[in-house]
Length: 387
Length: 81
Image (cartoon, rainbow over all chains, first blue to last red; front, side, top):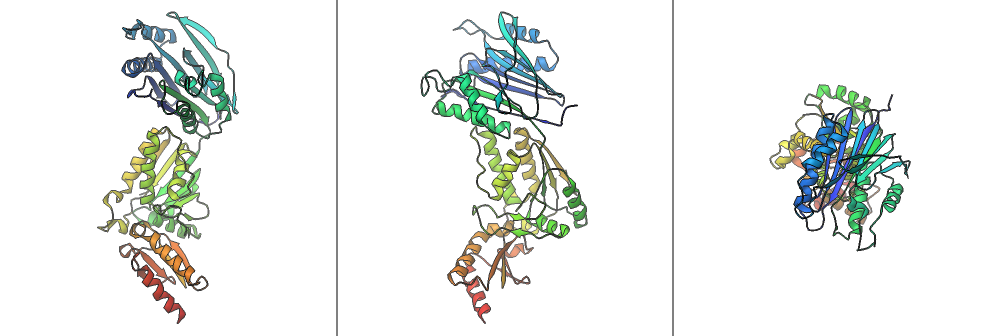
């Protein structure tokens, strides 16, 4: 019996400087019982490389998903890829990770840098089996993953980072491995961003090659429950709050009125903060038994916008400021894998005021928007209406 | 005397931050910490009169950043009576 776990996957890319398209392509297929990740690096850069990498990753992931044999898949790629008129070859390197529900992983590699598997922050060496298919030497490794393991595959842009600029030979595999061993990141997102960000620094913001990494981290599930507004029928308050308090994981209330109702129903004091960390962000409050209490719609709107920006960028986000927005985002981005929104549709009289901005009047829209972005970041999100 | 300034959504948008700072500065300047206890609160339910301020738990006022200084001076005179 495998421990309950969550497969946290993140990937980021840098385009070769001046290129609009990336010549590396990542394809992720997630089923309940199986995950397939393909990272393909097309020959050259720009459009040509992008087409090669897209074809390779798409064909391989689709064939493997449908149960095709590995050798058959590689042969299909060899015979399908268009041949470059300059180099007279059709070529794309690839790394594949197949992971099943019992955490058995198979890693298949062709000409990409060897994968990095970390257990307890140390590289875990795995024996590789070589097979030859269509004159290609392909390496296959099998390993049973455990909670806490971090597996990273990358394109050669990572191990060559800084070549001819800051470093004569680029970053090199062993130094990347050492860098990864030193990191202590709770999420794949964080570890992957650090790696790609480090590459970008070595390239002095001018990547000499397309640079991509995919990180998989096996994590124990971390639940967070977010209550965002009381039910439309006040007689449901007590019941909703009881169910919420009985749910697993961290508990957050986003909404002043909801927070007041919690304090009343739980018979506990609510202490609102007086010091503004950021004048834009309404102060938070404290209620015993809740991990975070914030104002509602403004905090959620700001958090949703910042979340979209985070999803777009490669840089590691900072949640150092302790205001309501950052505290909420830290919980969502770093400290959770499963996020449950509890939404009540009580109308807030304040929001019916003609002066109140219209886009803020529908909290459910903000929550749906936020849930969508969190989904893109690999979180498992559900929205539950309390009324 | 307890003064609670609403920091709910509507009041926040209408300038709770400025009101709190004007009150804080005035209380410090005049060394009124012993007689005026400044606090904040989530929604006081008087959103159409933002920024909502409640004095001694039952007297509600609507204060704006522009009127905050006059308001706190008024309270000062009242508390000294």
